[in-house]
Image 1 (cartoon, rainbow, N blue to C red):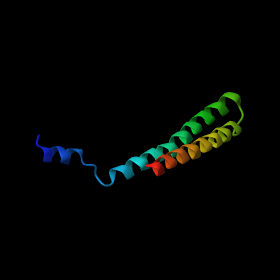
Image 2 (image 1 turned 45 degrees about the horizontal axis):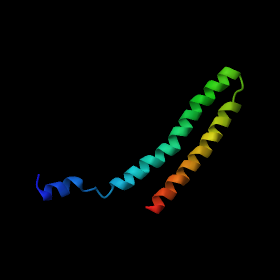
Image 3 (image 1 turned 90 degrees about the horizontal axis):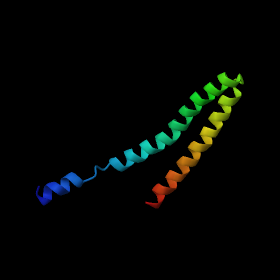
Length: 79
């Protein structure tokens, strides 16, 4: 492989860093909420406490999502 071909293969596409950041932030939003939905429904069925454990799990997931977004935002700002 020549030097020119090596430079082309290592080049980052202009939109790639933005897409990676978008995916990271999307996971921080979606993953805790989806997990909380399933966990909350399961706990409500197990303990017959509808809808309180579901609402509690979603509230905790919301706090986790916000914290994850803030931490990742500050990491991106430092770059």
